[in-house]
Length: 435
Ligand code: GDP
Image (cartoon, rainbow, N blue to C red; front, side):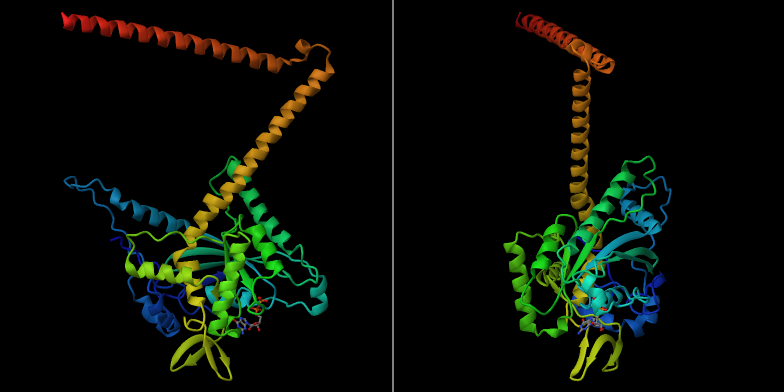
C-alpha cells in the first residue's frame, strides 16, 4: 500500500507572515488527511500552537548519505529527499485569482484561508462610484512560512467585477490578465536567460457565486465559459450561512446541472490511485462530492464551550466556520492548500499553458509563412521574368536542396549495394553448408 507523507497536520505551527500578512495568523494552514478529525483539531489550533512547535517536523530531515563501500544498494532511493530539499530551498509560488461581485465575502475568505490581513487598506466604493465602475486587477502578495517551507502567495483580486449596471465586459479584464501572464511567461521562456523566470501565471480562479438566486446567472456563465479553458476554475458559494442544508444541496445540484448543460468543465480532480490508503480515498471522495464548495468566512475568533473557534456570532448561535456541518471551508482549505496545490500548478503548466503555447507557435509559424509568401510575391512582381525573380537567397536554398537530394540518392544506392552484397554472401554460405 502506498504510504502518504502526511501533507497537512491540523495543529500545525502558525505560519509567519511577512509582506502583506498581518498578525491574525494564529493557527496552522495545513489540513490533515483525516478531514473529520482535522475540523476539531484546527479549531483548537490557537491554543495548541505552542504544543505544535514540539511536534516532529512534517518532513523529517533527510539523513546524510554515508559513503560506505560495502553497501548493497545503489542509493537512488534518496531522490525524493533530494527533490524535497531543493524545492524547500527554492520555495513555492502560487497565484490565486478571486472573482465575484463585491460583498460576497471574498476578502474575508482569503484572510480566513491564509490567516493574514491582505485587505488592510481597502476602501469600499459607494453606490455612485460602483454604477460606473469598471473591473480592475489588484495584486497582493504575501510570504508565508510554515515549518521551514516558504510559500509566496499572490492573490489577484478583481474589484468592481459585476458592480456596474452594464457588466457585460467584466470577464474581459480577467481573460486579458490571464493571457498576459501566459504571454509574459512564453516570452521569458523563449529568451536567453531562463533561469530566473518569475511565474505569475494564474494557477487557480476561485469564482464566487452568490447564495441568493436559484442557480448560475448569465453573467456567471459568460465568465466561466470564457475562462474554463485558460485557468483552473473552482466554484465557491459565498456566505453559505444564508442557506439551510437543503437549500445548499439544491443550489449545488442546479449549478452542476447548469455547467453540464453549457458544456463547461471546471477544474477536474485527478483520479485517486487504487493503491492509495483508505483515509485518503475517503477524503478525496468527500472533496469531490462537495463541489461547488459552500463556504462561510470570518476573521473573528470566538470562544465556544471553552474552545477558540473562527466563527460568526448570531443572536441564535455561532456559525463555526471550521465545522464541516456548518460549511465546506475546511474542505476548500484542504483542497487548495494541502492536497491539490501542486496539481493545480501542474494542470496550469501541462494543460492551460500548453494550449496557449501551441496557439502562439502556430500563430507565429503562420505569420512567418505569410511573410515569406508576401516577400516572394513582391520580388516576383518587381521583375518581369520568373528566373530574375528568384532572389540570391532562394537560389542558394535551391542549390542546397539539390545537393541534399543528390546525397540522399547516393546513400540509397550505397545501401542497396550493401544489401545485395550481404545477400550474395549469405547465399554462398548456405551453399557451403548444403554441400
Ligand atoms: P468582498 O467585497 O467580496 O471582499 O466581501 P467582504 O469579505 O468584504 O465581506 C462583505 C461583508 O460580508 C462583511 O461585512 C463581512 O463581514 C461579511 N461576510 C463575509 N463573509 C461572510 C459569510 O460567510 N457569511 C456572512 N453572513 N457574511 C459574511
